[in-house]
Length: 347
Ligand code: UD1
Ligand code: UDP
Picture 1: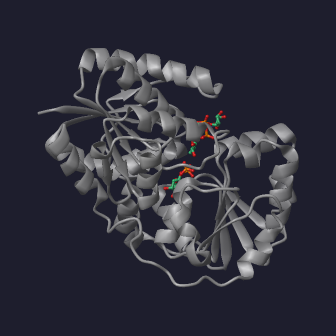
Picture 2: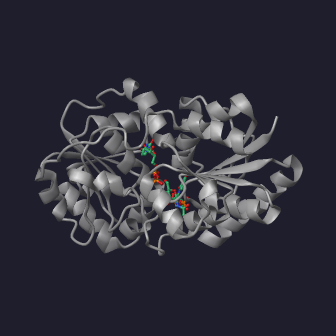
């Protein structure tokens, strides 16, 4: 049996890995490295428990908050050590985090075929660490699994060879379709559901204040699932959650709860990549606090709207109706099976 080691480390990767691990373990010796990038119980362990994933075979302690290079370097050192002993037939990485980059670089240096899931996405904003991570992962990938036609086009433009690229559904869509039946209304009043964690929204006190003030002035309650990065910045800037009476701050939730909060909200307001997509799959209007998105399909007919320079535009956008909804743009919920079968054919 061939051996594949999947590398995860950040919250969205645990969610992407759940359906993949289910399929991979049927056909491969499927091991998992958790880089320790996210380590709080509610950012990590909760997903392994709730989504019934086997515990990671290797879990690194990278020691919390670190600058980009140091964090990536420590992960690379540890991944390399595991690969020297385990000698995998392939390393599988997801998306665009520093854990993705570390895995992709080790695979390239050790001449281990690298599989990239969620390949070809581009924001065309090279100030985002994620954009650098994606470009490197795609450049060195042996097999590239793209969830959208745009992603395929992006790779073609970069001259990445066609016989390594596959158009598949999106593994996050598998998860939404699997778990949506378990979603239940989390509260009995109308609300907007908010998540914000991107450095360009959280790392300047004026920007963070402006966002919170706008949310505080909305016509419905705001439920804000607050990422540890955002908690840390609020504390650093001396911004008090209690000063925003319209906002209910909650700790990061488990996955079914996150789907529930989105599904029963009046609108999702976010800067998360995964949540833009999930909101679309759930047929929920979304406002994205970014100047660009990799998930451009969600923008059709007003289902997702970018708001960046002037955050007070949120109010105006909330009042605008959405147009026709196009079904299944992220697949029919069987992406993980499809990807695994392609890996079997090509490894
Ligand atoms: C990372 C990814 C981002 C992804 C996000 C998902 C990179 C460059 N960024 O951003 O693409 O959207 O994860 O959530 O890889 N922290 C904790 N506890 C935790 C995790 C983080 O306290 O369990 C705090 C630490 O102070 C840390 C900060 O959050 O310094 C940022 O964490 P980090 O993993 O570096 O980046 P994210 O903002 O989470
Ligand atoms: N999510 C969660 N609980 C929360 C907030 C988000 O389970 O409190 C899930 C969400 O449903 C999605 C994923 O985390 O599946 C998105 O991760 P995140 O926003 O951290 O990262 P990004 O997708 O922006 O990289």
